[in-house]
Length: 415
Image 1 (tube, helix red, strand yellow):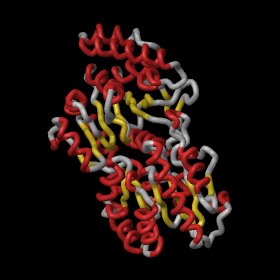
Image 2 (cartoon, helix red, strand yellow):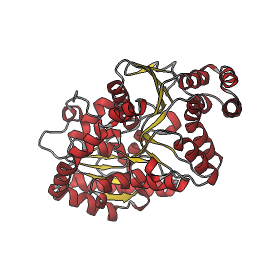
Image 3 (cartoon, helix red, strand yellow):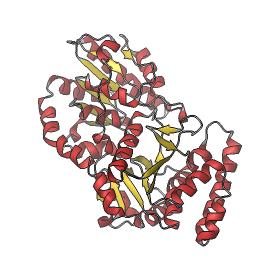
Image 4 (cartoon, helix red, strand yellow):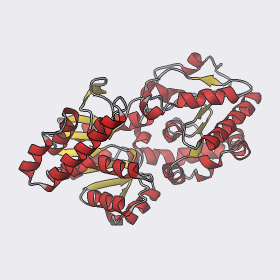
């Protein structure tokens, strides 16, 4: 049996790396004798594998390669989109012949999904569109491996993820066209279910599921307090931040976090700014944002400057007494370590999953982050975490168990 996991991201995004790690484990549990390959956004010349599973590269990576000039990327997109669209319209033998004309990296993914027994689009939050032409491109290239697989009769499963938004009718029709032909579509919050039904997906074809990050439990490999120089008895509070807003609003958000750091440290805690994402891809490096926050502080917090392996990074959250988390998988990493969190929402996955856990009152939209709004949440959780911890004890075991159901769902698809 041959399986291909598509739409993988980069390992420097610790949340997506955790999702891929869990997805591969679940595929192995479902099909122990299967051969599995990954098609993702890491260059196979740099990263030939992920946890021992071969990395093919991908069509998306090839057409969006930041190392190529803009004109080259544009030509690649037009050429690949034209060849693949025509192939999808031709009979299978002609389609396969046309796909063989693709450039090597794009050809590897196209032929792998065409020849697979099962394609799994990993969990995350990548099937969405913003305004403008980029939104159409993203939807098309995310769906393209599924379109090719379905052309050749290969079932495509959508691991637990967020869907949308899709502002244009054409985007919604294409999403519905692909997902209606998929035997298993898993949405990780109610908002995604609503957005898919607006696309024309029947509600009974969408299954509510749990983010695979709740099943990520690597062994602790580091003494993080010793690494950070924090005494065992001192409260350690984690903060994750990211670039997301227009410049003026971004600065306001960062300064609000800095004031919160100062207040927490003035009252006896030690604060560590944790880079959940530290990739050069698309300039998405939390360390850049966190350095600015540290500069705004009167008393500098601890900065984690190294690129830390996603498995090792999970351990730092377990050492915290509380997290103020913008990156949502940093919140998940903390919750599964029993650590209460204030979650700063930048996409609907945050509010949806926190509401699922009965923790919706601890969510603040990123556009609304000011010290005056953030501090009451942070101080209230710091001073009285008992009810929050009780809610975690009540809800998390069931949530984690649901996250571990994916192998059985995969086996049912193949049966």
